Image (cartoon, rainbow, N blue to C red; front, top):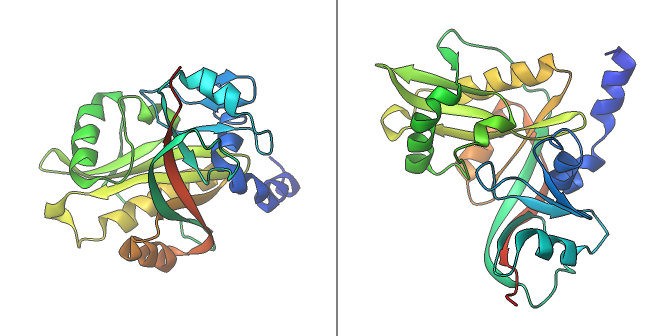
Length: 235
């Protein structure tokens, strides 16, 4: 890719305003399940779904999910039908690359499908956000092992034109305070930059420790947003 093309991709920040739709209609289209102007990921990959921005295509999403289906939306449109029951809301923030250094430390290893049972166990204990049986299909995942066991990991989730989201950053309680999260984030960043993309990420607004760490690594706050789950009305 030419220098001009890379620069043009980097200048596109509008795709981050509707990151799930931008991913499912773009780089992750091969994973997406579509109906009209609505899309979702397979249930074993991720609970996220979206409608085309400005379309108000809630009927398409309702048919896609089925009566009583639960949907997880990033920054849901205020026009979502009142009949849809709001189940939970988490205030979040979006941070973007502002000079993050990418480098791969010797202790970092690539994770594969064979590692998924350990990855599921680690994420269940540390709760970094949704990680399911097939989440690893969304991108590259890296980890650190100690004594043969997986003690820390991080990887890629949503990919949109010019940007890749870092996700599932977590460390076992027994190994916190050793800088493993920073080590893994820098390693994931290195892979993202190799493709010509820039890194971005989301975290909970209340997770001030993580936000401080990411800002120290070279991310900056771009915007605040909510993650909300809803139930589609039954028949």
